[in-house]
Image (tube, rainbow, N blue to C red; front, side):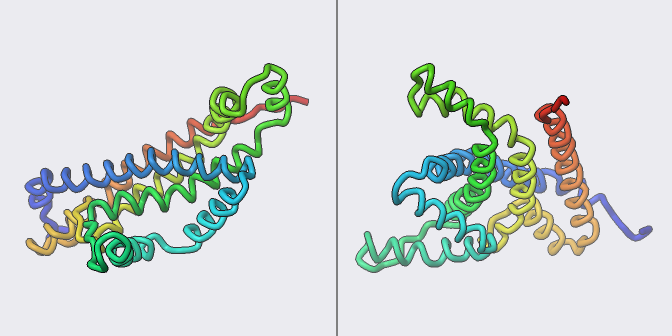
Length: 230
């Protein structure tokens, strides 16, 4: 431990901060877009919309059975070929690592958020729907104003837990040559030979952020817990 030199870490803080900003931006985007898409997929299955419900179910099952890194590779290498064949006379249409990361993470997380929301929809009592019908509310307004707010409240701890995993998974963008927090630390470490210092610093950053988010999960669980009385 006496040979460790953390001065290089201090000098590299601006570069690490840029990497962390990218990780947080990707997490926020994939969370917001993935939650919206996941909610749509869950509603399609919950409402049993003809054809679309089966497509949504198959999509969720497929994505949840494939590692994220494989989805990144597929999107990065296959989609340009398919798009080129369809729209560019057979010539590949480059998408780029940045677009691949944001789109792939969104599509991947949507499958997981969909399952969370779908379980939450099943937890809403039948009386809620009957009351909405008695008030002559349309299906849209029933879900918009009554059902979904309850679902998001109940599932918020699980959604946040999945988002923590999403933040950790952003380190996989190294396969696309993008510079996230881990990628930034790796580049500095390779240039200066400070592998232990840089990776230890990154581990502490992940620990602080994920621990804080985990505490938020614990608080949400207490607030959303349903108290039963006998």
